[in-house]
Image (cartoon, rainbow, N blue to C red; front, side, top):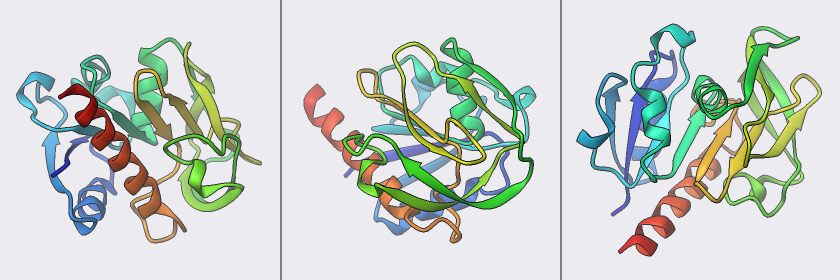
Length: 189
């Protein structure tokens, strides 16, 4: 069975990420973001959303151990900043229902959502510049980088919240991430 660990960056929806994965039949643990990556036994990591960069604990260390990582909202921003991209204030602030255009129909994380999907997202902060090795996989009228992927390193990020009911195909995002984790685990054995 595929196991996923959700790293808690103190986001208001973090418990819903764990629940969504458990509802898909996944063995899923929620851990504090101060937990060292070497103490975590999981096939994949979800870096949760959260209020700000001041409370991200050891989250950046999870990007370097070879396991697939899905960054959600702040989790994607951590990924971008740590790997050489940039993050800044969004033009559109709070939570909103947004239509997202999928730019890469072959992307393993969100390609199946093409050509577009409705999501619940916050754009107080957003990725402004992609890190090297990443492809912009989705955009919207209010945000240039709604999703990004580095398929070589199995690092994926979405600005939106797939765990909330307002996101139309949120379960599909998690199912696709599970498939990435399963394929990666099989290839390493």
